[in-house]
Each structure stands twice: as C-alpha cells, then as structure tokens.
Image (tube, rainbow, N blue to C red; front, side):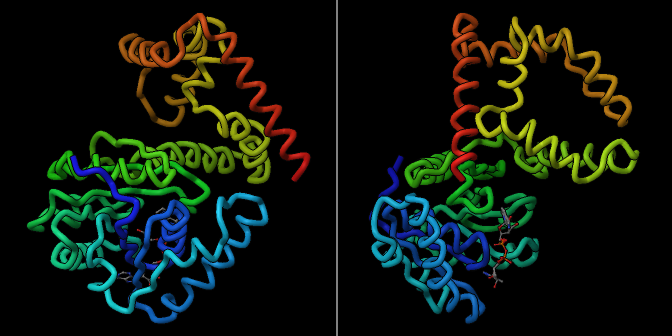
Length: 314
Ligand SMILES: NC(=O)c1ccc[n+]([C@@H]2O[C@H](COP(=O)([O-])OP(=O)(O)OC[C@H]3O[C@@H](n4cnc5c(N)ncnc54)[C@H](O)[C@@H]3O)[C@@H](O)[C@H]2O)c1
C-alpha cells in the first residue's frame, strides 16, 4: 500500500463549515491544502475564517507553531481542476444533495489523479447512491467527520461494496496521520454509527417531552451534567462495564429486562440475546481484562476529576 505523504497536497472541495474546518485539520498537520468552492464569496471567506479560528486555538495554547505558518499551507483555488491537480486525497464538502454529489463525484473522478482517494463528508448519503456508476468508483467512499473536525476527532469511514480495500486503508492512514480518529463502518447503513447513536437518544428525548415526563431544559441537563460527563471519557459499553461489579455481562443480567421493557414501550424489540451479550462481553474483556477492572474504574474517576478541575478554571 502506498503510504500517505505529508508533503503531497490534499484537495478540499466545498468551503462551507466543514470544508474550512478540514483545511485547518490538514494544514495544522503540515499537509498542503488546495481548497475550492464555486461561490466566490466563500472563496474569499476562507482565509479570514481560518485566521480567526487559528487565533482562537492559539489563545487556548492549542497550536504547535505560528498561525501564519499554518495559514501559508492553504491555497484557495479559483478552479476545481487546479485544486485537485496532484492531490493524493480529496475531501468533498459540498451540500448534502444526491444529484449534486453524483455530478461532483463524476467531475472529481474525471479530474483528480488516478491514485487519489475521493472521500465525501456526507452525513447520510451513501457512496453507493452517488458513485456507483463511475469508472473510478473503487476509490470512492464516505469519510464523515464530527463538526468541527479540528475539535471533534472521530471520522467514520464508510466504504461502499465497490470501494477497494486499498482506498479505505489509504484514507485511514492519512486521516490518522493528521490527528483524526478513523472508525470503520463495516457496511453501508443510513446515519452510520454517529447519527444512529445520536438519533436513538434524540428520539427518546422527543418522546419524554411529548409525554410530559420532562422539559426540554431538563433533558439537556441530564445529558450535560450526567451522561455526557462520562461520555467525554468512555462510551456506553464501557460505562455499563465499569458501572457494575462483574462487568457488562452482570449489567445485562441485572438491567437487561428493564431496558427491554423500555424498548417495548417504544415498539422496539431488539432483545439483548445471550449470544449478543456474550459477544459484547468477549470484546470488552479483550480490551479490559477482568483483573484490571478496579484500576480502570479509578482511572475513569480521575478523568472526571481532571475535567471538573478544567471546568472550574474555564
Ligand atoms: N455541518 C455539519 O454539522 C456536518 C457534519 C458532518 C458532515 N457534514 C456534511 O458535510 C457536507 C458539507 O456540509 P456543510 O455543513 O459544510 O455545508 P455548508 O452549506 O456550510 O457548505 C457547503 C459549501 O459547498 C459549496 N457548494 C455548493 N455547490 C457545490 C458544488 N457543486 N461543488 C462544491 N461545493 C459546492 C457551497 O457554496 C458551500 O460553501 C455535507 O455533506 C454535510 O452533510 C456536515
């Protein structure tokens, strides 16, 4: 596999919220960026917006070098063809409309060097819906970021069935190199992982407000002052694993029936079967052997203390 080259340029196509933020991610990691947008007003906004964000990052002491040095790595291009010429990787950040992405990916496949990976920031559209008919479809995939990607490192890699493994591997290597945290979505599903998890919580939040159980403010407080505090450090599986002595299998045994009743109330029948719980338990124990449970609980608590301290200083 050809390794990513920090010195060879990447192209960012579309200079709205996500495009500008991606330019910052790559430039900050010493990768030259060429960015293009069809709107002249957006092209002229790129450098001032980057300057302002770099200023904010510097004021939090989050830059390893001078803002001007980072800014110099970004070139705003007047033509798409100039932006993608010589690019090792293209991050498409255009509006979330399938016809638009179909046309744009056809252009990118025609204009970008044959070895360039073509990644879409799409939040919901699948590469199958906009790249299936292209001669170069093997190099197309979705790379869905958090917003903004220079502050939220997770990025979901979603290959279509036709995406070649080497394209996904090259995207993963480059994105990890620039400090992002790539996660594989093993098959194309609407909403990927991020928005499916977010959606599950939001659907229940709407139901709680509709049923008069809680105010909007209180739902947000339960997440902000409760669940979210832990989730800044550990995910829902690790939370369950660490919250119950005996780990996640004991959690499923004790709490599973209650969660099953809550699901049934919402018309959901996705039982935590013994096989499924055993699989989750196996994956958790591979990450955290049972004998390290106490130490990890203490680590989680220290993480919460450090965050509390940082909040007090903010
Ligand atoms: N905003 C978010 O929270 C978020 C998070 C993750 C992913 N995304 C995805 O990133 C993509 C971009 O979203 P955004 O929030 O930056 O939108 P945005 O509206 O801020 O920016 C889109 C930019 O694309 C430009 N554009 C219009 N037509 C174009 C074309 N044919 N080719 C190239 N650029 C074109 C527009 O001029 C605009 O500057 C979408 O697919 C969106 O779903 C957004």
